[in-house]
Image 1 (tube, rainbow, N blue to C red):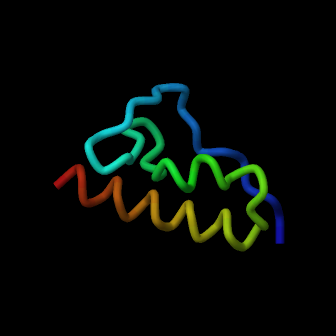
Image 2: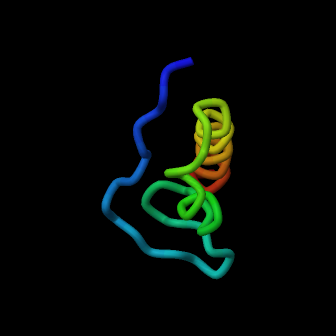
Image 3: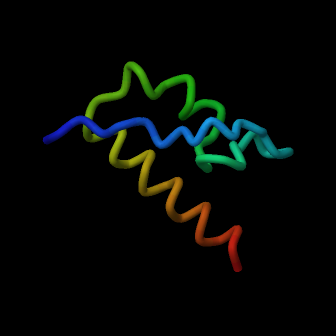
Length: 57
């Protein structure tokens, strides 16, 4: 499995739930990213996509 690039958009601002408004990762996911396996990164990216979709509605 190919390693994923960070979804960071350099627009870091955390909301009240500690979710970044730029990339939609949680603070925990941001801190974990560098040590995460490729599989774990894919899971984080799926979580981000779901959060982003919910925030756009």
